[in-house]
Image (cartoon, rainbow, N blue to C red; front, side, top):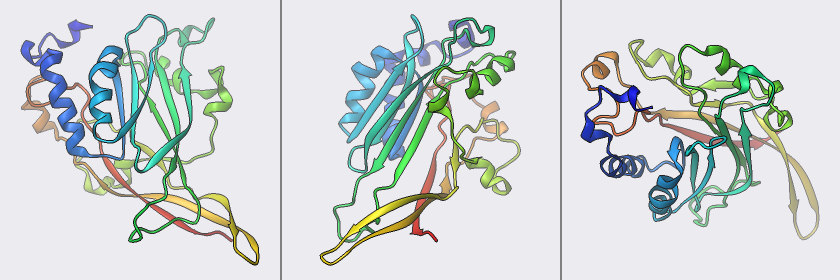
Length: 260
């Protein structure tokens, strides 16, 4: 879809220029978990994955439906998590007019690795975190298709998508502190609902089974660009921002307590 980028600086569109700046931005963020969309399959395997691996990340990738050559990529630090499950979500469904596109989702379940340092708090159980990475249809005139893609009852893998989490936007959580002139679209969502799990404690004399409550809470975020800042830039990608996706970043804190 090169017509979408006709007002971008031509040299800034070249992959050989963009790739180093994109990876440098990921390195600088140093996030525990990274979600990327519209990643060319060759760019993923030949460039991004090896460079993320060199920084201690493990990657998961799913290509879009059909003959498309891009998809979603999710990375996580191997020192902090291990992947215990992964799912591919196809938004394409035969015979449904609103589900004839090639968009996909990638869902992975991570388990927290126990810290090796004695200075770190050791959880009573290994907490798990579900990461959903997706890219819905871009077309701003087809909100009907986007809504259909978000409707789990339409999907053949309905059971995989079903959850009872009360999702909240990271940036709306701190809405009082975010300028109303921001032009970035926020699609980072989290659930602060406590999740209960059972921990089997084994001692020399007895075995106990405790209810453990897990929850996460946002404690930091990356500032968004204002309208004035965006208006002062050339169209994306440009020499300042080498992707047409602006980075969103947050810091979450994990809490654990005994549940009644």
